[in-house]
Image (cartoon, rainbow, N blue to C red; front, side, top):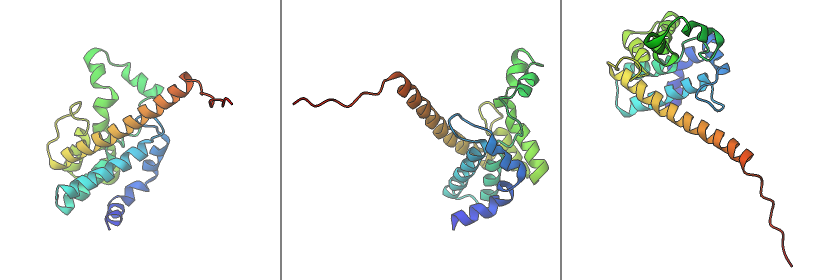
Amino acid sequence: MQDEEFHRITDDIITHPLFTQMQDLTHHGGENSLYDHSVDTAKCAYRLARRFHMREERIEAVTRAALLHDFFGYDWRSEAHKQFLRHYSGLRRLTHMHAFVHGAMAARRANRLFGLDERQRSAITSHMFPLAPIPRNSEAWVLTLADKMVASREMSEAVGWHMRRWYRRMVPAVSAPTRRM
């Protein structure tokens, strides 16, 4: 039942051509895409909202906001984004870095395409707290928690993936011991 409900809430976003383009952008290292991260965060937020006994309209709002929280529409590792940052220096450069601005950019873009309410826009804008404004509503706190939980898991998996690769290169394969007779 919950899978059906989740898909009812999110299907128009998940199947949108601009959203599916996020499958091509890596996120949090390893083999994870921005699309996977967003869907996993939405599923986590949905489960948390249910566990916290939020009202149905708030569960729907936080689930949709979580799905769109990284819908900023650019590759922050690209040369174009690096050129954008070169226009700033000092503290202004720091405050224009991706981690600080992508929530507000994602909220504007998502609002244009999917018509968000104020609580959803606020949740998306503040999901990077403490690098973003403090969350001001329950949806924002649930989204922030869900994003941190999913990102922590993804980063742990990525570190493990890189460590296994490093270990295989650094430690030569040990041949099987020979039997003495």
